[in-house]
Image 1 (cartoon, rainbow, N blue to C red):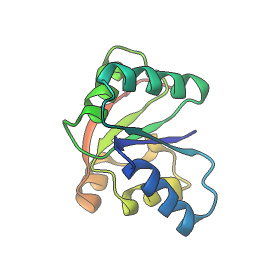
Image 2 (cartoon, rainbow, N blue to C red; image 1 turned 60 degrees about the vertical axis):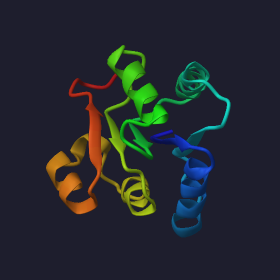
Image 3 (cartoon, rainbow, N blue to C red; image 1 turned 90 degrees about the vertical axis):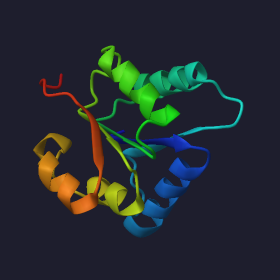
Image 4 (tube, helix red, strand yellow; image 1 turned 135 degrees about the vertical axis):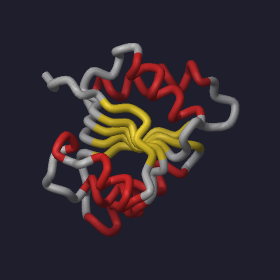
Length: 131
């Protein structure tokens, strides 16, 4: 997996499903939703398990400061998301397609250009080399 879309309820899966309708299979994209009654700890555990099974370069979250975004940022800052280069809030279909269909690796994207073109909010960057 190259991209994980995390957010509230069914939104992450709906974004991924719509992106697949436009862009094809997109095997390097996965989704993770937070559902009513689920605690941040439960979401954290599911996110860590998903990323242990398949590393990601990028996590797109639906809402800056929302639980999925906060969970991703907390575990990234704790060093538990070694492969993640960026966490970007403000997931949208155009933003997901931009990353999913691009031949440019995440670390080759200019953050200032990304923000100007998409209105995205970059919440975390890992400037170190990837293993």
